[in-house]
Structure formats: structure tokens, C-alpha cells
Length: 313
Image (cartoon, rainbow, N blue to C red; front, side, top):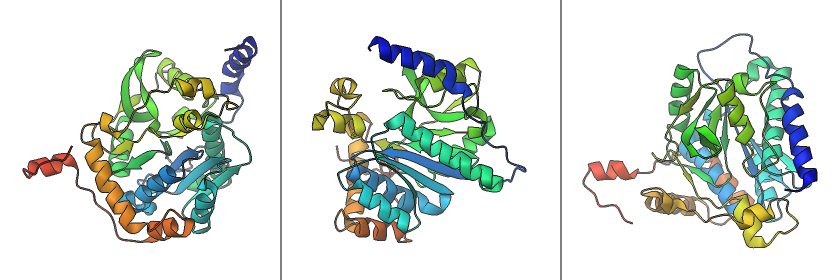
């Protein structure tokens, strides 16, 4: 990292936690918790389509008050798909005219949700689910199970916490975490960074301030499947040397669904369902598939094993 970039990051870390307003407090707490979802996309048209399809047809669109997708000036057809989804009332699209990168994109989505909440506090989400664009949701109970744990434990962050060399207390990967914005989106806690690990200082601040982080088996119990085909791989494989993260992306180690036990089996089952519903990867075809009411229930491997059936590998 150059001296200039080090100085900029140092200034960012010093001042950014104090340059924003706290998340607006709700006037009254209702028993039913509202949840919003945010995601950043860049040239992952196929994968963001998988994600949105899984949210609408496996989880159910009605589980989310708002789905906010930030698109970082994609050129692969993503923008057209996302605009069509917005026109259908399924998502809110924040369309950037230049590459803003992952961390700043997440901050944009959070600012949007906070500004909406300030105009109408009663519409403020109680929790925000953050997913990468190359994540597929496999369990219809994801939202209910996450909220049950997060509310019971009063957790500021809920996700799968794993060993990580830069945080002694472990790290919950940004690809799939639930946050309580009233606890974590406030002055004194670093927002998401313009960095390869955009929530590194964010989670360090949670540990320092003793804001509870609840472990939840997002990936290990196949609530979600992370395909590891997101922006870093796009940058690397496309040779985008003008991208600020090209050097970091060039060292990106390939991972895939087979890193998770039975991941390939469940992915095959999901793709069969997706391909039967989406005739072709066009905006209209994807929107029509997402608008259908019929729920899609995937068999999870352990459910099949309980019945004595053989799992394909």
C-alpha cells in the first residue's frame, strides 16, 4: 500500500466513525420485527438473478420490508435485470454511474434505509440482512430462525463466526450477516471500508465495544450457499487492471460450493428449479419467475439421509 493510501486510510479510520448520524430510534417496539436486505452487485448478472429468485421463491418476498441492491455500473446485463425488478416493485435499485466498490456500496444502502427511516420512523427496519450477490438462500426459515436467535440474544451482529487472524474473537463473513442497526450503525463504529475486507474495522469495533455477536450456522447448515463467484473473481478473470482491487483479486483463491459438505448436491437441485422456472436469463423471464406465488422447497441433504436415501456427490 502506498504512503498516500496509508494516510487516507488512517484519516478514514480516525474520522469516519464520527461523521454520521445514529440510526433513528423507533418510537415504539412492535412484537413483529421488520427486516430489510442489502446487497452490492458488479457484473454478476447470473448470480444476482439466483439470489433474487431464492429470496422471492424460497424465502418469500413478503419476509422483507425492502430489498436494496446497489449496482456499481455493471456492463454485463445486470443493470437491465435490476431495473426490471425495481419496476415490478420487488427491489429498490441504487444505480451508480461509476464503480464505487463493495464497502462504499453497502454504506450507500445503509444511508438509504436510514434516510427512509428518518422520514417515517415506523417504517424503519429492526434488522438488516447483508448478503453477497453470489449467495443463494436455501432454507425458507432463514429470516425466522435468524430473528429468533438475534432477538433472544440481543445481538448486534448474527452470522457464522470463524477463526480469523486479524480478529482474535473471530470473524463473521460479510457475505451473510444480520445486523441490528440501532446497536451497530452509529457514531463511534467504523462504517464499511473501501477495502478488501470492508467490515474488518467494523467488526473490530463491535468487539472493542463489547457489542454481542451471535454465532449462527449460515453456511455450515446450508441456510445459504456462497458460490464464491463474486466481484473479486470477476475482477481477476476479466483482467480489470484499472480496478483498485486488482492486485488483491489476483491473489484470490478459488473456492466453490463443494467446500461445503453436500454443497454441490443442493446447488444442483437449486439450479434445476431455477432453470425450470426461468426460460432464459432475460429481465422479463427473471421478473416473471420471481413474481410467481408458488413456494419452492429444496430437500436438504440431512433430510434425505434421515430417509435412508443416497446423496449424490
